[in-house]
Image (tube, rainbow, N blue to C red; front, side):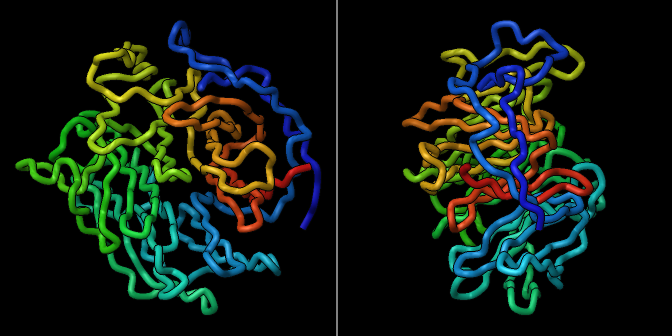
Length: 380
C-alpha cells in the first residue's frame, strides 16, 4: 500500500449547485449557486488501496472488517480491510454489461448481522433488450460465497442499454430502488411503468403498503416518486429524509429531496436542455413539479451520493457528498431542513463512481473505469 498526500485542489471554475467546467451551451440564468467556501489541497489526505476494473458500487459490511465492491463486468469482490486481500465472491449471476448495464449496486440487508442477507442490482439479457433487476441472497463472507439469490423486483418494460440507475437504499422496513427512464423519457411521467421513478418495496420485494399510486387502476403499485431521469445516488439523512442525486440531460443535474408521491418533472421540466440543443421548460413556481434542492449547470454527472454521519471531518456531519463523473469532482452540500447549499468542491482528477463511509469515519472513493483507484480520505 502506498501512502501519499495528493494535491486535491479546488476546481478553477465554481460548480453551480451547481457549477462545473466549460459549458457547451450558455448556462445563462439557469446557473445555480456556487460553493460558498474555498476548498484547498489541505482538507484531506488521500491513501491509495489498489485498482479495480470498472468498479460501480461499494459498501462496508456491518460488524466485519470487509468492504464489498461490485465491478460492472459482473464481479463481486470482498476486500479484507485488515490485510488488504481481495477475493472474488462466488454465486454472482450473469450480467448483460452492454452500454450502461452490468453488475450495479450492492447493499447489506437490515438483518445482515443475523442472517447475511444482501441485495444486488444488475442488468440481465431480455428478449426485448435489457432489464434491470434487484435480487436478494445470503452472503457468507468467510467463504466468499453468495447463495439463495433470487430476483425480487424488475424494471418493466425492458428496453435498451442506458439509464438503469438501480441504486439501493435499505431501511429496517423498506427497500428503495432508483429506476432510470431507460433513455425513453416519457415513462417518467407514466405511472403504469416503474421506469423514471423511485420505488418503495418491502424487504421481500413486494410493493410496500401505502404507496401513493397503489390504489390507481393500471398504476405500478411500487412507485414512491416519479419524474426522474437517471438517479444514480440515493441516501438517507439523520432525520430519515431521503435524498436522490440524478443526471440531467445536457446539464441540469439535480439533488432532490424525496416526498411521498412527488413528481420531479422529467422530461417536462429541467434546468438542462436536450442534447440536440432544444429547450426544456425550466422549473418554475406553480408548475406542479417538485423543484431540485440544488442543481448543476454546467453538469458534473453525479454518479454517487453519500450523507456523511461521522465526526472525523470537522463540520461535515450531515452533509451530502456527491461524486462527479464528468466533473471528476467531489462536492460537499450542506443540508438544512429542506434546503441544500453547495459549500465545497474538489477536483479529484478522475471520474468518481462510488462513495462510502467507513466505520472509523474515513471516506472511501472508488474511481470509474478500468484501473480505477480505491482511495481513502482522512483529515490532514
